Image 1 (cartoon, rainbow, N blue to C red):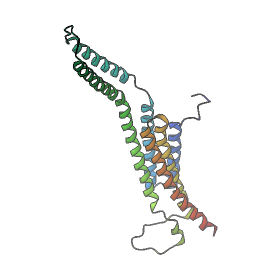
Image 2: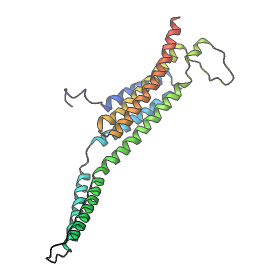
Image 3: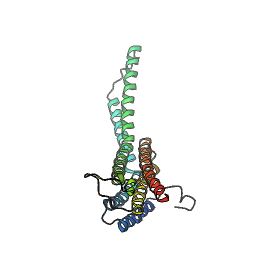
Image 4: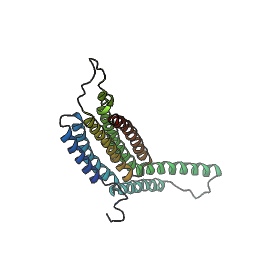
Length: 236
């Protein structure tokens, strides 16, 4: 990658390296928290999804060759079929001519549809694989959101607890760091999804990536609202 194009594309290795560093930070700060395992899972997914995005971005050589062979076989069959048609040397009537043209047009439409189906089969297979990967990232975003769900900034006010209230032992600083880690993880989930939009030009995949980015942005906004509340409490 040249210097002029180094910053025009997302680099999967840099995203994974950032996640690995974030995972180490979370492990050092909260070694027993479930968020540590979630981030470790995200690191593993980042490596696998980076390889998947790179694979999907590479054009296939075997598939176009297979399509050409398929089209050639159809052409050979058509030629063989037409070779058995006998011409008696007489002019065809208008009705016979129209009937023959209609049959030829219908045959061409069927053959063209078959060839088009074969040409787009690889694209649809890649789209399915990309959507499966994006579904995994969407699920991880919701798992991260579940881990921050009970991290309520009002606990620092020492409000009354009930018998079913979750155990909250974090200080203001720890709670802020925990929420910041969740926000960073969500942002990186969005960047992993963007890898597929960067590597592919499929409109369905790009729309799915945009949906995930909207999801992670919305979830991150809720987290930063909590962090803002904690900051306001510290200033009081």
